[in-house]
Image (cartoon, rainbow over all chains, first blue to last red; front, side, top):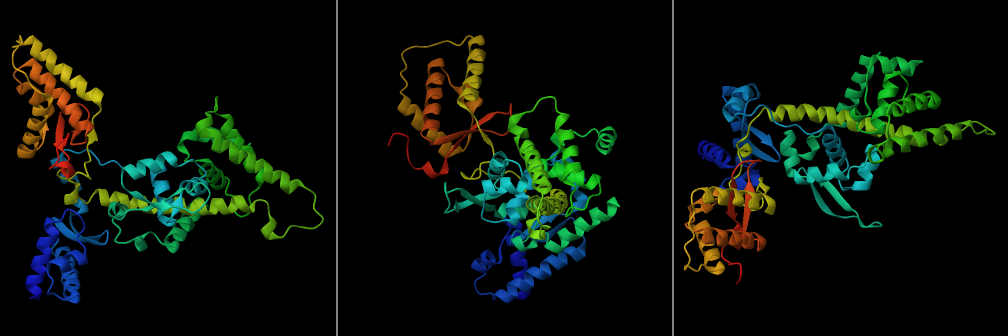
Length: 182
Length: 249
């Protein structure tokens, strides 16, 4: 069964356009125990990595997806006739970052943290579906509260919100900046 | 003066800073100042120098910069006040600002890390990059405005007129029938190309009626008119949720 299971899961990931989660897989191959599914997934990821092929399976956004390898980017772009992909503007990235590290944050709080009015960038991020509104705060004016979406994780290749750069990583960056100055 | 040296060495515009905190951090770094012990007078002078370089103040954008200059001056004034005894560390008037700067500095650092991740991801192509087939909620295209539609329509009409478009009277086309026809076509054959559809119409009258129908269908949210990109053809999709209903039922 295990070998078959691996093949089946591979096929399922192949036809999914969004990250395929363990739960979705479980829903399809009902009789397989979760541990087997998990093991098969791990093996699939490792197999592809070991084979050094044009595509691999990556854990992303809480699920699994096929992706091309980074070094093939120039060829893929040539095929699709895309010069480059648009990156987020510095303002968008900064706002997004603020939301990511402060879930359930309001527009006023974001603006205060950045020292800049952020309502415009928030709207752009909402349009891009990188953040979502999850409700209203019980405070004067009942302001909307924001948090990052599943698409945010996918966009940055994170598997879950815990994969955000940690305090230590941030401290390391700050330390490097400091030492590069002096 | 130090600030002038900076201004000569770097032509820095206010626009490149994401905000006043960004500018402050930049100045602090340039002067190699300890963020926990900022010489307020010196930094305020530099800061104001940057603002001065602007010939005009755009209140919308620079109000935030002005706010922080006021804050800096306020802090300095607080520090100048004579005190009976030295302030405890928590009472340092600079503290609020320092905390904000530290917090902001962290956001900036996290941003640079996320930017790297973004770079990595943009180079790994996934299948969901391909435009999704029309599911009603994730239509990624721009919905066109009435103006775009009308413009395209008149373009066709002009072309038709040039082809000696003859109007044959005597065939009445009702809006309702035409609307049903359009919906049927959409249901059967999927999205239609807006221009092509009108080109196919035999009579001017019919084309006109179809156009009104289309507007009505868009208004009743039965269909949606989208454009992949500016100047590309306009396509008409049936909205999925209304597949079984007709506009006037």
